Length: 111
Image 1 (cartoon, one colour):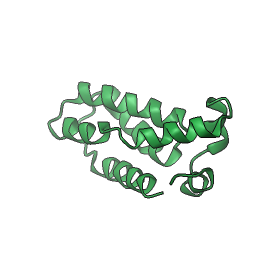
Image 2 (cartoon, one colour):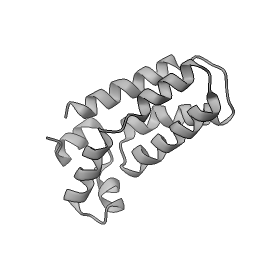
Image 3 (tube, rainbow, N blue to C red):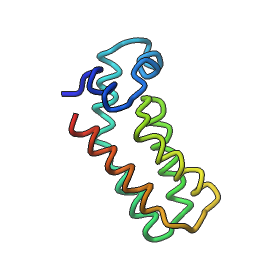
Image 4 (tube, helix red, strand yellow):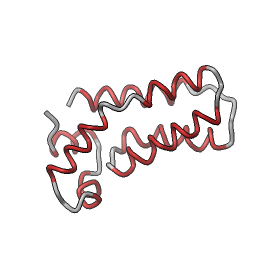
């Protein structure tokens, strides 16, 4: 079960996340838990693999918004970096950023 303390240990900016959720702890934790059901990270990986950078940008931008609004810093950092590269349809190796995002997502799932 995800708790505020576990999120703090994970590296989330819980104070900011709570503020965005009107300081309602239950609401914030519900949104964080709901984000675990999102499959867009897998979709992003597939879009990058086939070099559909326009669609990948749209997906990454959505993930960036979700993770940033929840102040899930360990996830939002690699996603934000990818978003900026994809904004310009940069043809580069995204492997390290994708692996970091997947690792951080798995850590969040394991809380």
